[in-house]
Amino acid sequence: MSGAVVIGAGPGIGRAVAQRFAREGLPVAVLARRQETVDDAAAALAPAGVPVLALAADARDERDLRAALDAVVEAHGVPAALVYNAALVRPDAPGELSAAEHVDAWRVNVLGAYTAAAHVARQMAARGTGSILLTGGMPEPVAAYTSLSLGKAGLRTLAALLHEHLGPRGVHVATVTVGGYVEPGGDYDPDDIAEHYWRLHVQRPEQWELEVRHG
Image (cartoon, rainbow, N blue to C red; front, side, top):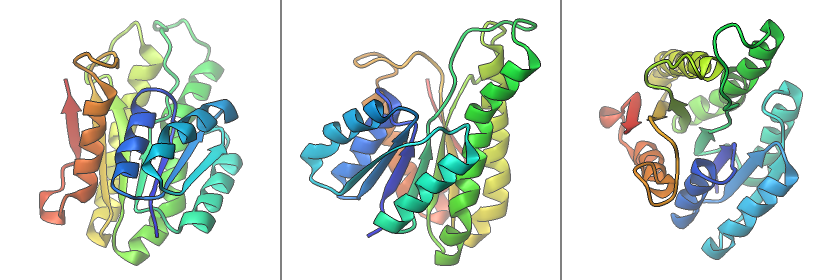
């Protein structure tokens, strides 16, 4: 039975999304850079009683990420849903970072999503179903978060390109744009945000949205 794979499954949105899909009985694969992070995510999923695969993979490393996704497909089949939630979140003003540091941020914030989507898109399209859901943010650019603002703008463009390319082949691509600080019990509660991902995943083609904004 195919399930969901969540890349960037740390505390907050990633873990909440994994739990939301697990509550529907789907197998879940959780990926993050550190093994401790995915082990904690897997432990949080245990009450759902679904098959869980916890894999350490660095979204900046194309080979590492593709190998992890191959392991997911081998264990759970081609994902029904791919969620990309990895991001390099740090304050940096224009001119503060070197070009190399911006490239490193871009690898996490955009290219990791591109690699993950490209890796599963062909199989999803061949099947005629699937969803690729990207965690957006920075609905307006903020100079104090320059690399993140650039990355989230790039991610939004990537979603539009993937939607154009994959939508006619049955694959729903969308972003969930989060406009504030994620915190349990607040306006940006991760459990509330996770509902958007499930709703997008189960939408019929005539209902498909390209972007949902929370806040």
